Amino acid sequence: MADLRVNFAGISSPNPFWLASAPPTNSGYQVMRAFEAGWGGVVWKTLTDKPIVNTTSRFAGLRLHGQRMVGFNNIELISDRPLADNLREIAEVKRRFPDRAVIASIMIEPKRDLWHEVIKRTQDAGVDGFELNFGCPHGMAERGMGAAVGQHPDLVKMQTEWAKEAATVPVIAKLTPNITDIRVTAQAARAGGADAVSMINTINSLMGVDLNTWNTIPHIDGRGAHGGYCGPAVKPIALHMVAECAKDPLVGIPISGMGGISDWRDAVEFMLMGSTSVQVCTAVMHHGFRIVEDMLDGLNNYLDDKGILRAMDLVGQATGKYGDWNRLNLRYQTVAKIDEDTCIRCNKCYVACEDSAHQAIQMIANKEDGKSRYHLEVVRDECVGCNLCYEVCPVDGCITMEVVDNGLDAVTWSDLQDTVAHGNR
Image (cartoon, rainbow, N blue to C red; front, side):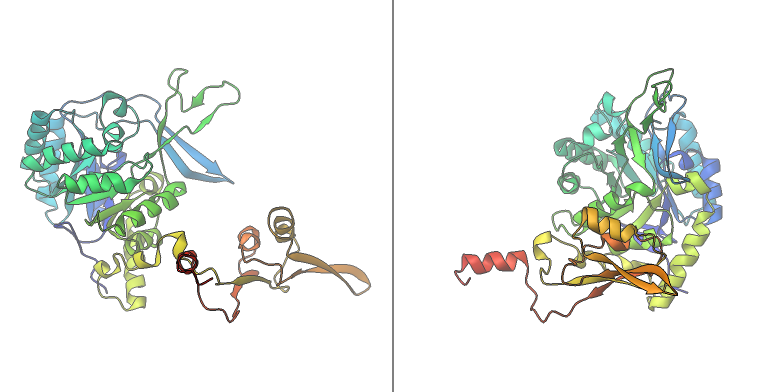
C-alpha cells in the first residue's frame, strides 16, 4: 500500500482529498462526519466578521441525457453563521481530529485592521492554514470582495500581504477563473507572500430560463442573478488553469486544485498536472461524504499498479508534456480505422465526417446472401486524424486512431519560424 500523505505548503494531510469551502463544510457536525468517512482535510465554508443573509432558492443543476448535475450553479453566499459559532466548532474538530488538515476560508472587507482581527481570532481556534477567498463571483463581489478582488492583481497582492502580516500558519490564495489569464493573479498572490494558491473558484453563469414563466433558473420571487458554475462540466477549464500555473516559474508555489473532481481518476489528473492536494465539492453534494472511500481505494490501487510509493511523487509529473501549441510536432499523423465486426451501421461517423470534417469515410456497397449491404471504409489519404469519428461513435473500440509512420522528422511551428528567420527555407 502506497503512502497517501501529502505536505501542501507545510500543511500535512493523511491523504490529498480535501473538501472545498462550500455547503459540505458549513459546520463542525458535517466536518467531523467527513473526517470519519476518510477525508484528509477540509476548507471550512468561508468566514467573515459578521453573518450575511442568504436567499431561497439558491441551487440549479444542468441535466444532460438523463444525467443529473453534469454542471451545477449556485447563488449561495459565504457562511451565514456567527463567526464565534464557527470558531468554537473548528476548535472542537481539531481537538478530535488533530491529524487532519483544517483550513479556514476567509473573506474580509478591504480594511487592514479587520483582516488582522479575523485572522488572529480564527488562528486561535487552531486552524492549519488560511484560504483567502478571492474568487466567489456573486453577491460578495458586488460588495467589493471575492472575485471583485481576484480580478485585480494589485488587490490580490495587497490583501494577501494583510493576511500574511497576522498569520503564523500558511496562507493560500484562492483564485477566480473569471479573468483572462489566471497566472497574473497567481503571480500577484506570490508577490504578496502567499504560501500557495488554489484554483478554481466557480465560473460566472446563468443556468437557464423557464420557458413557461420566463423566470431565470433559479429565481427568487421572480428575479434572478448570475451565479457560480461548477461540477464535472468545468473540469477541463480548471485543469487547464492548474497546468498553466504549474508550468509558470513566476508562480512557483504549491497548488491545490479543484473544479469538477468527481473520482480518483480526476484527482490523479490534477496531481499529475501540478496539484498537491485536490478539493471536492459538487460530487459530495451529489453523492455524499462516502465517495472518498472509492477515491482512497482507487488512488491506492493506481499507485500500487504503477509501482509508485508515495502520492506526492505524482505531483507535476505530466506538467512537462503540456505547453504552447507552437511546440507541437506538425508531422505527427494518425488515421481512423473502423472495426467492421463491431460497427452497428449507425452511420454517425459517416455523417460527422461528411458534414463537419474531411469526407474521408465512404459507404462501400456489397451483396451478401442476396441482400444489399454496405460497409464503412476510411479513405486513408483523405483522413486528417481529427478524431471526430472516434468521438461520435457510440461503440467503444469500434473506431481507433492509428499512428502513421510517415518517415518524416518531427518539426514544430517554432522550428519552421526559426528556419525562415535564418534563411534556410
